[in-house]
Length: 154
Length: 288
Image (cartoon, rainbow over all chains, first blue to last red; front, side, top):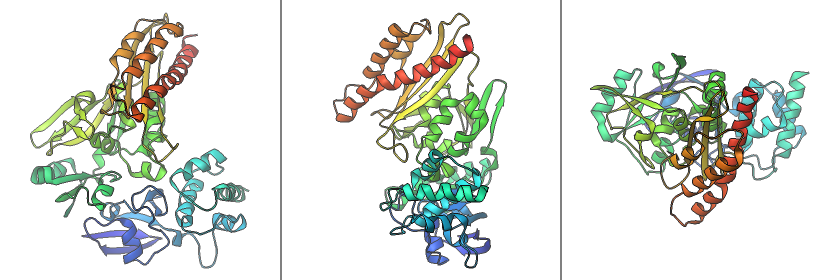
């Protein structure tokens, strides 16, 4: 089956298997290994990418169902050498430890900050409810998100 | 396995007729895809209905809210019409999975998968949901209660497609809500979920009440025994009837003696107390 996909602003025409999940398409066909497979059943958020701006678990999303849509992965966030405000805040707050959850967490928070300019802590935590982090206890991640929101707003 | 992408209801119905029980409708895929990827359910064909524009709408016409089968949980949780006219559904949709789930999971999927834990079902039951199903031989309407035949089992024939859900919007002097108990606040199925809709007369007598629950051994269902003790009582007279309703709800869990059943019996009365308190406060605010 052939699908058209815009990934990080680049158009692709890809042949995919009928039951293929988007995560496999991104990692194995396009070499975008930012989104991670952890649980493989849409429970943990490590594979989160944005489809038409909304966060999805790409490990259980049929690649076929994304035909004609725009996908953003963590690779699409930073320009040439410039981290986004959110990524810079992650560095400042030491919001990354092992890093496995980070690409997914960054994508869900990117979607949040695009939707709500100055989210409350409760809104940040609600947005993160589908992303499991075994290292940080979430506190640094939440602080980084709030800090980034303030930086963007000011 | 074949992947069939369809862009109209007519095309979908053609594919469903062709594949019958061997085909599986794919919408958001949050239920279908994990089962497929884990090899639990491998259909001969996935029929991807995601591109059918006609199933995406939310409208309110002539005192009826109509919601297309492809409307996502995220839209239900954020649309102002739903928050205003169907707050229980709005709250239930927000309780499904997490944001990643809600972006793609559809109302039609939640209804047709018919999990015993499906959050939207109690909310739809208290809104008197009627479903429109279409097939080659035309369309038929069926009430949600009749549609749900058991956990994971419905009256949907293999050749039929769920097109839309029609709901009775909240009127004046009425309130509703949905509350859920789960082990985690997100990304977890309901141990028990409860929806309540109350309507009172101008003098404050409860003249309409619907209560529905999910999360037990059965499909989501109404609880007539708890509804009947509230009907005809004064909204202000909370102690008597509301206490009886709590007991009737605990009885509705059924005879099972599993730890889960025992736990449901313990938490349901409290869950109902919170919901009823919230609903009566909202209505009293209006009546007073």
